[in-house]
Length: 160
Image 1 (cartoon, rainbow, N blue to C red):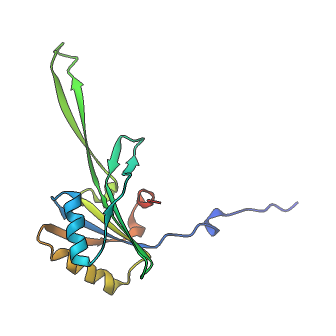
Image 2 (image 1 turned 90 degrees about the vertical axis):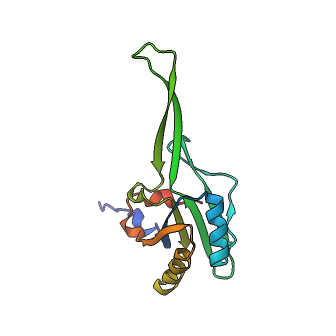
Image 3 (image 1 turned 30 degrees about the horizontal axis):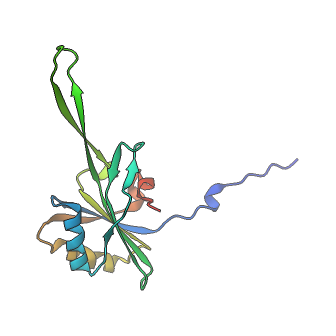
């Protein structure tokens, strides 16, 4: 009797996208405004943040669907700080202290504060042009292209 094997990889299609890491210390809404201005986008804040880690962490997300070029642009925060109030049980103290823990959406690039994801991968020339425009923003410390193939946590970047 013949044994047949079904390989699911034949049915799964890799999502093609470009990814840019952005280092800056400004708030997410301010960066979205500056990117809208510099790149002629219309990024808007989504109603629901990205829930991760069983809703312990949330990451803000801005999105714009470019109908003329059939691209979706996402600006997502890569950093989430969670403050937990803890009581020191060892000393028998009545006092509590706050403990701050930092989580990252893409841990491999923990230094990047924000990630700009462009669906329907850009050509190298277009991506370089976008990077040059981002780097001209005074509040941006640095920005660089990230190869999506090198990411271990690529699944974290599926937003829909």
